[in-house]
Length: 242
Length: 304
Image (cartoon, rainbow over all chains, first blue to last red; front, side, top):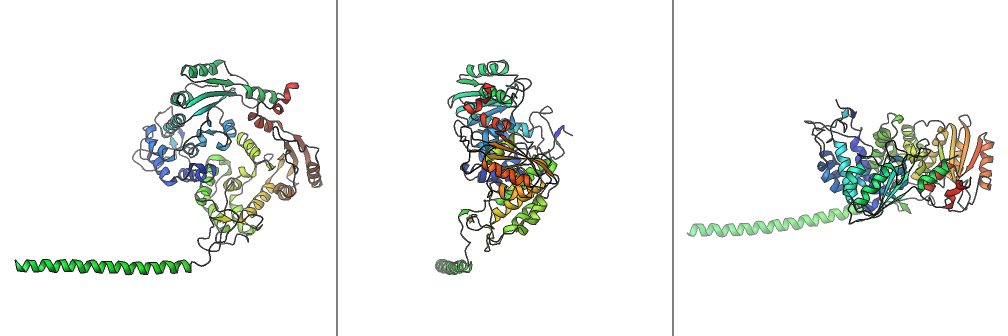
């Protein structure tokens, strides 16, 4: 029926299990959360609805229940380098990317949608964003990204992939469309951009060139203090040249 | 009128009497309840044993189940069909209501059988004293699997559990440390899982050791040194590649020519394995340098 993958099997057990995993083991500093209540709020955002009519604000209760502060100077935004970000953020010890927050941790890599006139999840297929924008997963990540950006403070880091086809700073993209517009100038002291190449990958983009230059200018025009570093890139290059 | 006055006073008296009766009944109830409760506390009998290590992880069942489904469905779908409920059950029955100093490998046998899965050749990555680094590496390079990247290890990582003979059978307050007793649920689990992980390895295997540790990179009391190397199957495993990593800016206590590495090589060669050793295996060092880009250790290529 739809072009996208269906709901992840055992979604409820996975989401609830991840919630407890997070509050008991990954980041107990966030304190006690009611994981069952959080699951209900998550489910009610999209269950029994046409999966093309789920809006970001439908997840507001879920976000409120699962919200916790993001420590200053720990926010890490990224595009096109998920594996590197995972190891970079070091499970939230060094940085806290969106996937290292409770609300991101519970849902990362999962897929879900419901159907109109039925309380069941659709395991067969779910709409892609090309088929309709207001689908459960897209709307979730939009509000999650907005929330994450709004509550980021101090020095903000952005990790971009200098090897990405089409440029390190993709437009459209979550960072461009949902995160940058929601960064709070009063809370953010500096934005540090790192352009890092894939291990043994080509160097297509770097600070001051192409899409990274566009990003730097956009942030400066918005009034942010911006720095950009290719250090990591040159280190990687040097180490990779055999 | 006299008739009505009379009935009003009777009503008042009735209400008063009923009120007193209710109060008395409540008092009696309270006394009975109190005596029952204190008696129950005494009947509770022996309290749980007290140990030195942290207790069972709260919401253990939800965490284990969630991790199991997560691993099977979202992480490594090649693992195939696993019955996560059965797996949780077999873990629970391995330790619930048992004295946590009397755990045996038989207790874990059903769990090991249900949760084990084959490991592709050339992908097994062993480690000793490099916990953080090795797992950061496997997260960014999914070509290698540590024990904690298999279903069993993934479910149990950073989680603790132990039982107790008294109800409810699970001790959330404390669990025994190895120094208190060796046959505790955690130690027995990891010993068994490590043995099986080594037995399952085939082709070329890798091990990441720490060359900045004073006591030596290879220790015969570590799980790697006491269990894993002795359970590698020479008919399945052809080579062992050692990656000897130094902390960036850390001491170079040992290198591939060091004493403990020589000892390790002797043990492995005696078992007919080919061995190679590399100081600061590049892709892993890359990862270290990403966090320390300005350190001189990360500029080693500038002179070449």
